[in-house]
Amino acid sequence: MLLAAAAAPVAIAVYAAALTTGTEHTLDAKARVFTGAAISVETTGQLTRSARTDQLGTIVRRYSYGTVGDTQVAFIAVDPATLPGTAYWRNEFAGRSLPDLLTALAGPVTGGRLPAIVVDPRHELGATADVTLGTSTAHVATATTAALFPGRRLPWPMIIVDRNRLGPIDPHAGSFDELWTNGPAAPAEAAVRAQDQLLFDTIDQAQVFDAADYLGITWTFGYLTALAGLVGLVSVGALLLYVETRQRTRVAAYALGRRMGLSRATHLRSLLAELGLLLGLAYAVGVALSWVALELVHGLLDVDPIRPPTPLLVLPVAVLAGAAVAVAVVAALTALHAQRVADRTPPAETLRLGT
Image 1 (cartoon, rainbow, N blue to C red):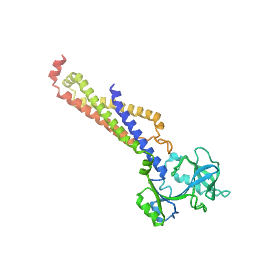
Image 2: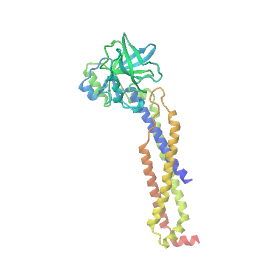
Image 3: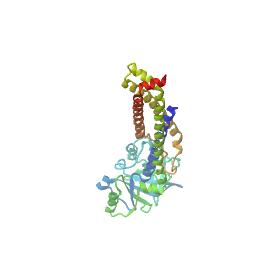
Image 4: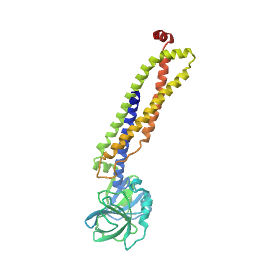
């Protein structure tokens, strides 16, 4: 019973922490995939790469009205040299690093077709595509694929090419130039204005959270964490009551042991070993149970299925370490408390009551 009582707060704390941490990481990932980086400063004009823009981030050109036949696509032209240092990336997006993925864009132009990275979960595109951009047509061939790519905003296939190799495109094809940055918005906005371009919009995490109605979800994190802490305090109280009750039945044995040469240090070490083993096992059981529960439910808790990525399962290292430290401290303090209770009880009175 004590094992179950001690494992419960650990299981709840790890479960709540992993759930909230995973949800926080998922929401952050959804926002950063949407913006491409921490912040995206947009203009309807055309930005020129410079030392200033390289210092701040990377320039991306987005075409809003691309089509391949009857299929709408997101056509994005990136700078492979500066994108990896700025764009939000997780290896789950393609199973490898972003620089490795971008090397495909440097491949040869075969049959007049520019090599491209294609994100096409529904397999709506073929190995080659003729992308209509206004009155222009971009001929591309799939050089490699990815499950997801930064800058995805609509549930359409994405085609990513090297902006330095892309030829002239109809200026009325609905293009936006975006300066992605992971720093403050003000310097990026100033860099756009310095090129005499009109600032169209600035997108950041807060704006995405507000538009996607994520704020209400984030407010539950503190409640779940507080609930886990409350359960932990209740369990610690229950453990102390258990030790207090159990120690009373051991006082006579301790008194006799002391008369036979048992030292306080040896008795204390025995208490530490007993409680440490018990609480350590409870910690392991609680972590295992919480992880089983997380494996079962985390994939079903997508707060926004429309926006990728799917829910992320994140190991709450800080909470695991904190719970381990808390278990060790509780075991030590409980053992010291039990030792103090035993030492305070008069041996003569104990032996008299025992007889």
